[in-house]
Length: 113
Length: 111
Image (cartoon, rainbow over all chains, first blue to last red; front, top):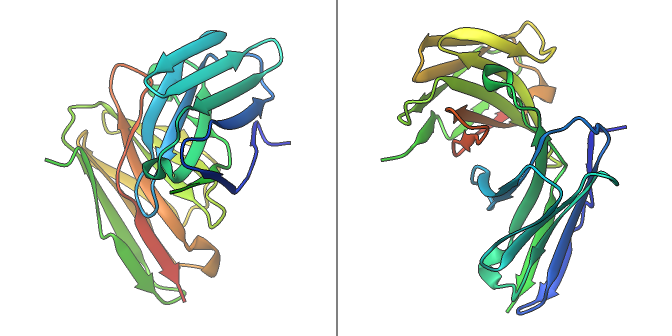
């Protein structure tokens, strides 16, 4: 079993739709949770970062963590064609120099104009 | 003023060859990483260095040897390339927080 499982997609939605991207993780000791966005042929870039259960909102993006069920989600409101990318959830432990991110397999999202 | 840069962007080579990928960051970070992303987009850590010292080595074959001449640079040398080494290799760096900043990637194709 992978440490982080992610709905693989691909996901195709019309412009303006609400998008829900989901991951589960196996280790309850993970301390922080991130969402990275990766455009085609580019490096991942950090989109959202959270470390506690609950919701964190940033513009059209909301990251949700439920530590009791080991479930993390990213919601995108009013999706735009520019949101078309692969979304990677990631988690890890605070550790300074020993910090390593453990990624999900990514979900490819296409927002159709 | 690219934060994390990698060269080359594309690398096409024959099986058995030796090749190197270079990474540089201008963020002043102490920690740098190498990740491998396979054809299914799965991103997995290979190595991390902190101030030129190897910290993480994720059971990567000995054919892969990272080298950090200073804390702003982390290079990856691969000996005796195999077909299964074909992937996109990403360099990343982090400072005082857990946020990692990724480079644009090097797409390696082994023929």
